Length: 367
Image (cartoon, rainbow, N blue to C red; front, side, top):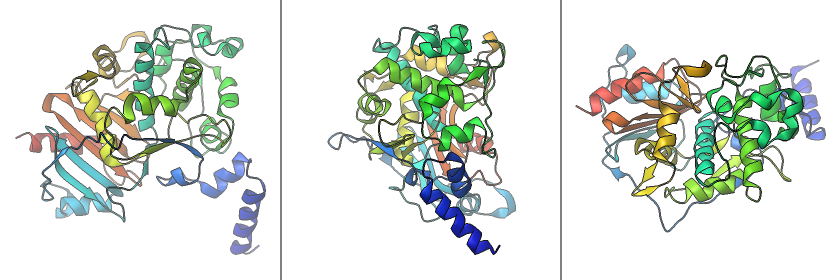
């Protein structure tokens, strides 16, 4: 069968079977930073009367030694970067966009959304929607009791130590990740999850933990959606420059994909970093407790936890730095000791290990 006919038949399949997760997987695969266009979403409004602006003293000639004597800009562009910001002492020291992207371009966060979900869990504890990270998941999602989740706490989910049986492969159309990403009933899929290890025994990074946190948050908030809570707690108070969206599983009564899929702009992602750089305080107002920020980003190896991961944030070293990270090379790198934030958004990682690049920038900028 000619290739064009096969493509047309596949397109017909997708259009006539819009609820079919497999057809969407085949048609759209692989995940792309433009995926905010293919999913329904909820809008997260900003406060246009209260926009926070970083001081703007850009230096496009930021000099970093890279391979093959490329300029830094060529290096970024060749390695699939679409946005790159360096912010030091609340001043934009470098800001560039590539590959037809600009300051107003929307980029899907992918797993950087996990870090935002963690922030909202911390806020929900402060607001008494959730009592404690020691609460069992079944306190909020009692249906999971029959799957053996009585001993799984919110902290287990936050630390990825729940023992969840979850196939994280995005290449497997029958795996959990594809079901959660392309499926249209996240709650139903979440309630089917089971355990393969004893909770607290070992760290295993899987997105099901983050989606269960989203389900807990949804149940705890009751009359608010996760997007509404994000708007209330972060998007408006932090003076975001643009509105954002959060992709949901379906148009009617949809559920936010809290393991991924917060769609925003580079400068606004940087403000998430600034909030944690300042220990949860935003210009004198405590948005989320300092204790929560500290617990979320410290090195901890107790109870099965991994030294490189806490409360949905990556810990790349023992210098106090921490990172929100997405599968296609989305990063919010935060260095509190040097008052530095780096945001890198990309179509892919390219051929770069980005964290050492951020650490090199830290050395240069703070001289």
